[in-house]
Image 1 (cartoon, rainbow over the protein chains, first blue to last red):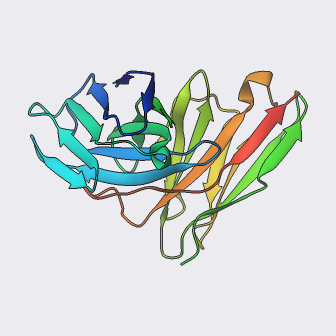
Image 2 (cartoon, chains in turn yellow, red):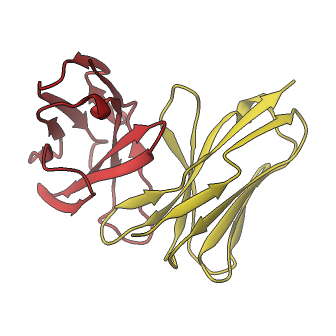
Image 3 (cartoon, rainbow over the protein chains, first blue to last red):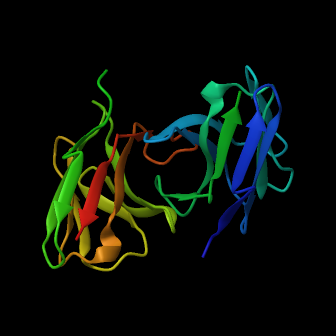
Length: 111
Length: 115
């Protein structure tokens, strides 16, 4: 079945450093979504990418969808303590709203 | 608009028992999905309901079942609980029917502990 892997699994950074998480799918995706889950919280939708090679920015966050629509990345510039959490990518897995979530990257930001 | 609500928030059961979890989606949302989250397996899709019909199902045993009511509220049931069923159960609602833009709105989850 479809698998979605993310690397790295964990990342510790100093506040102000940049952070990137990579997402790779075993199958071509029609679109990809990104979610953030704070410690003790629930996943919160960040963005959805649909087009091959698409790049979207949200303030310090830059999301990219690969040309082959099998990979994606999330880059955070100048991390802040508010960026702490686990970042998941997710791709559609069949019809409806069924999603296959990536393995997640847990980000810790130290002062 | 109120967000997705789930009840109860915490639950402790013993092996062999059954449990029912409830989810109220955002008003107007007709799609409700359920996910199981564990440290070892991550976020795994259980099933999706749309207009009272199960539209998708994940790879879970038949002990896991669900339903959706006419007001879009959903319940999931786990029978004959096993220790491995201990997890955070998340409900997510969506306004769309699976079209391209189908943002999922998650509830706070129900933390189930099986002893």
